[in-house]
Image 1 (cartoon, rainbow, N blue to C red):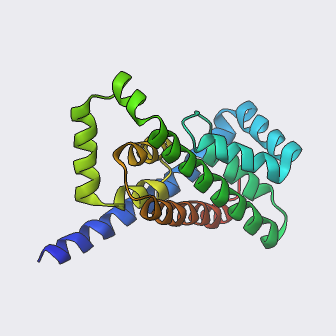
Image 2 (image 1 turned 135 degrees about the vertical axis):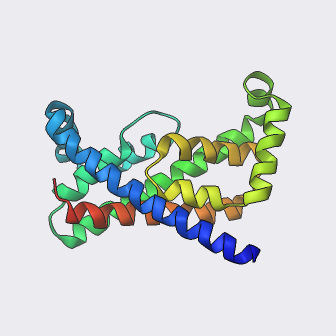
Length: 193
């Protein structure tokens, strides 16, 4: 009975993730009409800096720095000529996002004592640990797939603070980045801006 409930919850979460990706694409499309100068700036940046610019943008946007990662990525995919270049953009984004999540995890692990001393109480850290113990790596996968950088990036940091197994973290982080950017690229190709 519990397994059926878990499968239903997983299916609901996956459906929510797909809906969130679609809403992100619609938001990007709306942004191109409502704020053409911002969209034009991102488009110009992608055209000027190409693949290295996408790598740096996705990397920075996947750390704690606020950066419109999905807008940059969707723009890059839409500007890419041919399926080979689109696949290159996905691969670059996956690697950049994955490396940034490892950086977040590592920084949290290294700065754990200082961070806990100044920003997080021991009780809050213990609550986060209980949360990860209860749900395992599922939050890494779920929040990594949906367009939720403001949620996913802190979760990668919290995973490092709580001492989540690094191999398990890396696996789920890599899978989530692959699914996130792969789905976003597939859907962006259907909704070309």
